Amino acid sequence: MSRTVATLEISSNAFNEIADKLRAAGYNHLFMVDGSIDMYGIGLACAPKPTGPVCSCNSRSGPDYCEVHAA
Ligand SMILES: [Zn+2]
Image (tube, rainbow, N blue to C red; front, side):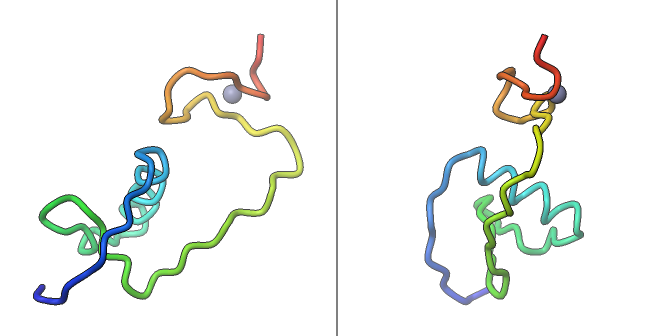
């Protein structure tokens, strides 16, 4: 790819969330040789606020408080 892209640095948590979703959707071709993602044509949207507690047990940010499974 010879097109030049601007780079927006984001947190590793945000990057991993985006990367996981793109890979799960079969967008592996968007990953560039340096590991960044060419998101041309893909818009980011803010998820609606969840109406109930959210399980964060499998959160990639590591062990943290889970609203659902707090002991
Ligand atoms: Zn949980």
